[in-house]
Length: 193
Image 1 (cartoon, rainbow, N blue to C red):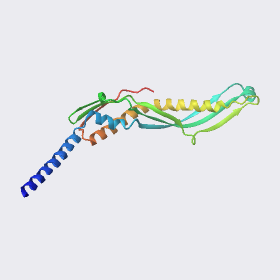
Image 2: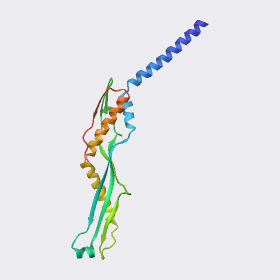
Image 3: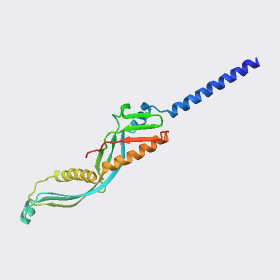
Image 4: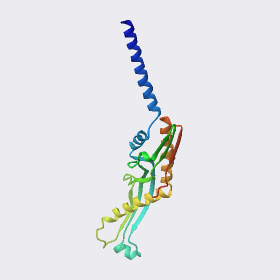
């Protein structure tokens, strides 16, 4: 009876040790699909944001008399935020190549994910309206739309997509080294605003 119990204990220890080493080996050998799932959880991955201020001067022009009677101008001081990053929805296992402790990832191009006005920091600085001008409620709306477009253009001119690429490479490299890769190669095509 003692031999049977001793043999049973040895078998249980061997099974537990086998399971433990199998789990450890599997964890140290991540597969492409597992890496893709980890990256895809980021979905729309925001890697950088810029805050930009623009002055928008729009409306009708003319001489002093025309402005007095028919002028319709607005001066808008607008502040907005542009967020850039990556849409990871279409990332597939073909974009990841693993060879032992080395990994290579082909990322999509960076893109502008959103552009928005900061309403608490955006204000009408000056509004001039002539005596005979009909109500034009669209002038401020048009100025705000123009502000969003100019804020986006300014962020693009300042290199927001390049910053998004640099930040993504740093963050992904750190994440992949944390899960056990020693050589990480990340390829990101240039984005266009």
